[in-house]
Image (cartoon, rainbow, N blue to C red):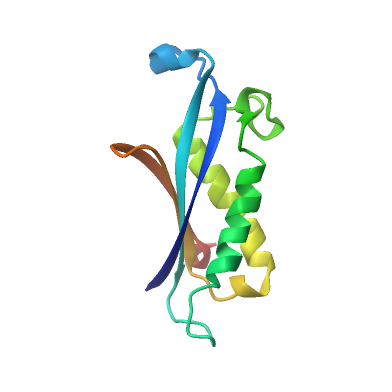
Length: 132
């Protein structure tokens, strides 16, 4: 399996209003390092997984809708908890929707999203296109 990973940062504000989240119940900020890894069983006709610039552009576009936003007020998170895990799935679904529409998305096996809050804590979500 071949892979290509692109990385970007984004910042959000949110609250996690459940007792399980302790002090994070209140409004607070978070900065995430976001990594999206695109997977392909075989390289495409250009001997690549995906154009690096196109992959970065897609991620930039997805994160632009989140960066510097209060997720408590974001319509896509209405009535939902915006945990790191939930954000990883949101990013994966949004990237997949864009990448599979374009020519570059044909033949991809899937993608993985990792959101790092610190060097010591991260969460991720994987999409397997072949299983869908």
